[in-house]
Image (cartoon, rainbow, N blue to C red; front, side, top):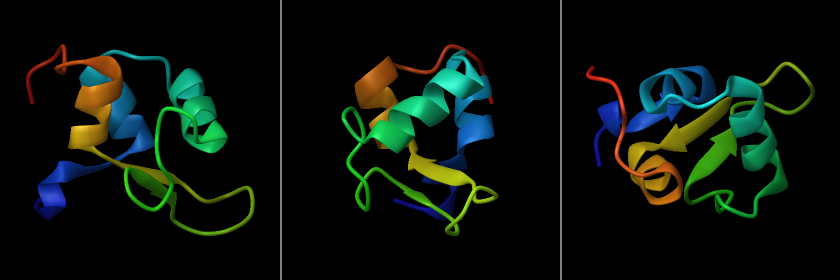
Length: 68
């Protein structure tokens, strides 16, 4: 895995063609994504952003729908 395999929630939503709010909710709930393995929040509080791996996005949503 390289740094290019880690995406912000906004990047992941755009690349995989999913709704940003829905993705963030799934990340927060921790059912489809394993916190600390597939994803993590960059800082505590309401202003943090989620980071998620491409591998986890592929597992949950299938192959990405758009080209890089």
